[in-house]
Length: 606
Image (cartoon, helix red, strand yellow):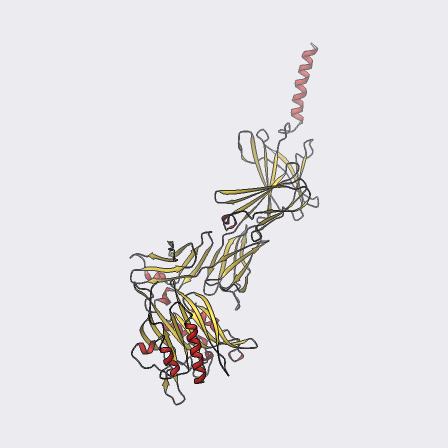
């Protein structure tokens, strides 16, 4: 009788315990992990519990002990996680202003458990090839690097609180390139763990006539600093006007001020953020429309692919080993829609560079490409500091002369930069911006920062520049030499302005000849020689290079009005013997005291 009563009493007590203990508390086996998401200003809490636990009461406090939330979590994401034994609960709360935060599970019960949530400090330094992490004593740290389907893992245990470093020097290049990711998991004593993700951003650069815009995703959600370097690695400045920043995705563009930074072919974009640094080298990227067979043809200086937007269509091409590509438009394509078409380069890592191609301007000139040779229009122009024949400074008039001529590579003389007489303007830079051209400037003399000299404007990328001083007395003289990439073919384009003294000109022309002997590729030499065609220094150059005017069976073309009102030729275009001269002419314009001399030439393809 007593045994039966004891059994009944035991059953009743167990039943009462089930009633007294809240549902699901009889066995507590909860896995707690969290993610501090500064991008969204939230903390994501993940709880994994046995399947018979379908609700978890909790309280959340900030670093000052203020109650932020008191609720029961009963919404689960996966009813059968990994097996039939677990439920998973997800809760997103606003990131407290005061950290560390505290989360209490099952508050007020004998199973109450407190977790302290900190903001993990992780720094990824790809330049130094190491990851730094701040750990508490006895914490376990796991770093997983992922690139595509490949992964590498590193593990350490902290014997005391402080900063720890993990060397990633052995990682292959693909793990350190845009598109790769680093996942840092910290397991604190007591079972709490958190994960920090760092994604190496893929960025897209859009460069137009008057703006630069950079889009991408931040590695840790902080706004990055975008630095611009020119094609010689010289610092140009940084772009920091944030147009949009949300959840780590950002859009940054130039400020629109007069001193804005314009990204051009050959430049470098440097991405800086929290010890993380990488460079995106902008390629030299050129394309033309070929009217004969309705194609887009061009070159790109780096491996990758090219894409052109035609309406809603994307026209893609993979360049060959020399970087050359051709896209067939087909008879259904409307040529007029090519005006200001946008072309893009996509690197193997996924970074993008987009630029506008002004087909309408190129079509004003002779066709650029045919099957046997490339047709070019070149110009030499002494711009007289932008001062017109009437004595007025008007760079817009100079720009109009160049644009309407259709010239694609131009040599300029008497160019001012920051001179008081021309209102401290950088003349060649302004012209390049007006004409959407590449440019380089070679000073012949500098007075307290005010420069004067020769310059090159080009519709094609300029890959290297040399500026040489010539022996002079009085006004210094020089020659600028630019290597121009014309659809994959390098042409040396040289610009000079010789002395008023015949003796000095003889010395200077021989110095130029010695420099010519060092050049391997074809040469175009243009400039104001201050000498007429029958003079010895001009005839000396005629022995080695073709005089474009004389090659068209003409003795001379007037480019300058002498003191007595006579039109004389003192401006010249000389070319390598293998280059064909098709036509030579001047543009009658009062924009300068010189007339621009123009030559249509044919350069043999590759």
